[in-house]
Length: 396
Image 1 (cartoon, one colour):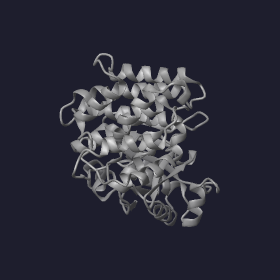
Image 2 (cartoon, rainbow, N blue to C red):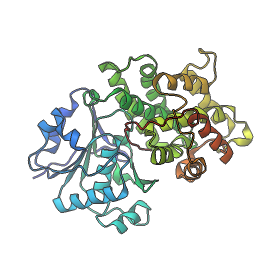
Image 3 (tube, helix red, strand yellow):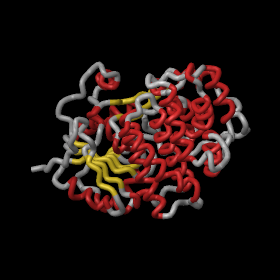
Image 4 (cartoon, rainbow, N blue to C red):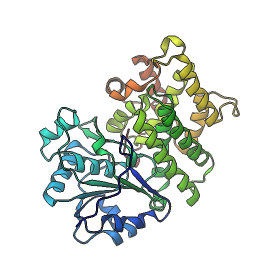
């Protein structure tokens, strides 16, 4: 008889977290005797720890790509139903984890799946349990109740408590093979999650605690690490990613993410980098906003408090600069900034799609269309050759 996974307590049924080096060794015991569907890339399945664990009778789903589509999520759900799996295991970056969530939650019919995503139809009864194992440190998807899928170039959010994992295994050893560009792109995603959660109109004492802890864990690594982080620094990045994920699970993200999705979909800019580029022009707008521009119902003082916390964490005063200057200096250390480049970007389209995202509702200050266009032109228009990078995919 299969043994159910341990479940978190509390009204939100929080995910049980198993963390630390070697924690992947707990997975065989958690999956023993289960009918398992594994969602992972073909490359991830070949990695030593995963290959050594993979049950011989496990069904695998690998037919997805970075920034996965709704159709791929539905196909994974069909396979889960056909296999009779009572445990879905997602292993990989944000794309794999998000497809695993879709496999658990969605019906196998495309039309019905669209209804579930839109919130017009309940999640089917009797969904299997969900175990998530991140192999990058960035998306925080292992502890959130949402998954990011795409329909064409448009981002679609599957957002339901049923998408939250029962157990997440966060083993920093699994991130050791991530190359430099992927490592730092994912770290930028963590950074954006924490910053956006801190200034969100939905921030709470709990979310702020998670976000501040995430920045305290990640900023020293972003500032001081060499080209590749040490094992201890990877531990810090993994911890920060999960903390920032817990923060945005409470608040959701804001404009930096809203405007990142079209940058990734249309220009191929890696998700975490796209978010960080947006922070570079959004930060001065938030920092300089007067009371007349504030949309946070708690008022101007709440925005000033968030900005003050961020200035302290980023060391703006020590550097003799503003928050935007400190953030841009950090970004320039780990990436090409301004981004090189997209002078021919379809700015009107990028702005229209970004500002129509539901994530805009979390912004603490009013953002005008012309400001969004000017900001994107600033961070995208300086280069002449556009480079496509590796992505840790997306959440939030």
